[in-house]
Length: 364
Image (cartoon, rainbow, N blue to C red; front, side, top):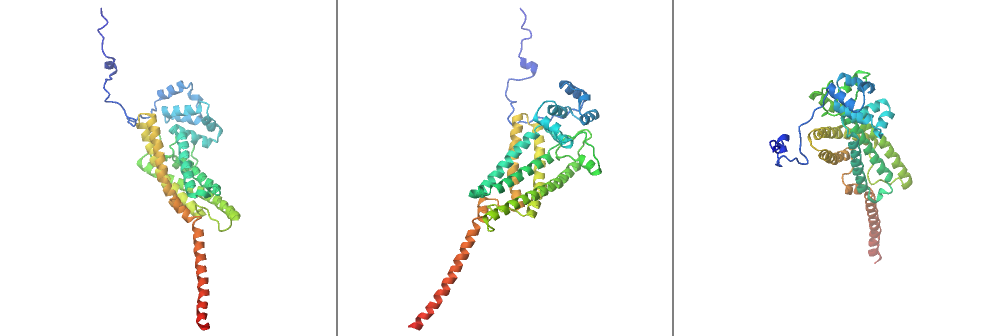
């Protein structure tokens, strides 16, 4: 009987071997997959989500008709706009300008919210550890100052991530020349190009400069606001504890706080998050598994925080180590007072002893 004429290994058909030489590691890479702007691919995505061109919002529909929306970006938009979720509620219940910017960032990077949440966890944890280590036993009485510093770092980090995250915003109309100019700039220097969105090396370099100016303004405003808050808290403590009271961590004045935060966000944060955005894009496109990409970007953000923290402390004139803060804080004033008291006592003793020694021979 027949039946054995086609006998063979199925691996010959699928071109797969039995050797394990091609096993991929945890951080193995692949060739980058580009975006597709083909009209048939766009129509396939719409059919999959049971949508038509007429059902799309005006700005997205216009961009799709112009051929500047890829099938990948459209899938990301559908996942936000069609499925009921908190993200969809935010995108529909907020002002149009914020909603367009919010959805545009999710279209460029679906993991934007997860990265923002992880950044907040790392920032708040590091700030809390700094406050606990430097304030020591005075943390219970200075909890309001510590909370203000942590809130300032949390807000500055959120604004930095928002400003430097890549965005795909469609349907926005530029009202003046400056708006048109900013629309041609990418949020991140390593953002990918697309139809009607071609970025040259000069454009990418100029975007770093514009983001430096933008983040510097954000830092000056943030530093100024929290400098006023900390000044008010410091006044309340001095009224309660006395004018000689001083916190464990010195409170920068208004000028130092505003200019220091401006320099920190405009120079340090801008450069670090520009590079981090480029690393995120490379890992998303090149790494073969989601777990390796998530692990790599998480480690990158932890290292980024540890590199940036000393620059913030230097810009604000704050102590780097807990021992320096304790020496400059509560422990410094009592030591100076004791030295002054000892010197005064010695002078008084000398004045009293000298006359008695002179009178003794006279009496003899």
